[in-house]
Structure formats: structure tokens, C-alpha cells
Figure (tube, rainbow, N blue to C red):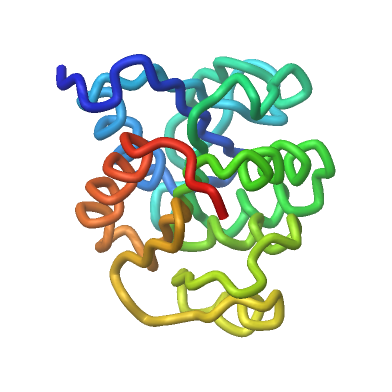
Length: 184
């Protein structure tokens, strides 16, 4: 295990229907770098993945969203999958939790459809992002500048397009978390 993220605590926020590999690859990268990671969810005990074209595995929930506080974490990861962020963006507790990371300038990493949840925070105006292409108009309407690149970093905010971008996404995510809070 590496030490780049030793003493860093990272929240991974998911609802049922997150894209499985968009949880497992970042989780592995974070743990390999020495981070402590909590899977946080509105679900109580377990959360169900989506694996490309069908339901995937269940994953244990470390902390229920109602008991989570952004101040207890150094960074946030938002996996994609269509169902997952669509549920999170209409959950006021989730939006408030995500907003807490923006307020404190803490790193946030969101991939694929994950940036959908970011829109609801009102914090994307003037930020450079990428995502799954179908979110482009939504992100631009929220004031972000969307670009088609494998990974985009804007002052601690890391975004990527699809699972094929996971190697670049995970590398940049670890770098930004290691840097710590970014003053906007």
C-alpha cells in the first residue's frame, strides 16, 4: 500500500445503479495510495451496482448519508451510472453533502454521469468540466465550460467522460486529493 494519501479520508457517494467499475477502480486506487474510504449512500446496509447492461454486485454501505458530514472527509468521489446520479441530484441531503466539499475547497472527483449531481449544488458556474457526452448541455446550462477530454481538472474538481478514462481519472484524482483543499 502506498502512502501518498495516508491520513486522508475519502467519501464515495452512491445510490443504487452506480456504474460498478466507476466505484471499484477509484476505490482500488484510493486504497492503494493509503486513503481510508467510506462508501456513503442513502441506502442503509448495501447498495447495488449496475454492470454495463445488467445489475451488478451489492456493496456494503459504510455510512448512511443521513449520518455523513462533509467536514469529516478530505475529498469526495462521485461514480456515474445513469440511475445513481439521477437519484442523488433530487436528494437534498446528497446535494447538501456534496455542496459541503465545494464550500471547503476540498477535492471532488466525478466521472461519466457523476457530474449530474454537481449541477444541483449551483457551484459549476465558470468551472471547466467533462462528462458523459449526454450531460454536456446540462453542464453548460449550469454555467460550466464543457470539454471533450479524458480528464479535466479545475481547482481540485476532477471530471472524466467514461469508464475508458478511468486510468487517467484515478491518477489525477489521487494527485488532487494528495494536494488537499484548493482555495477557489
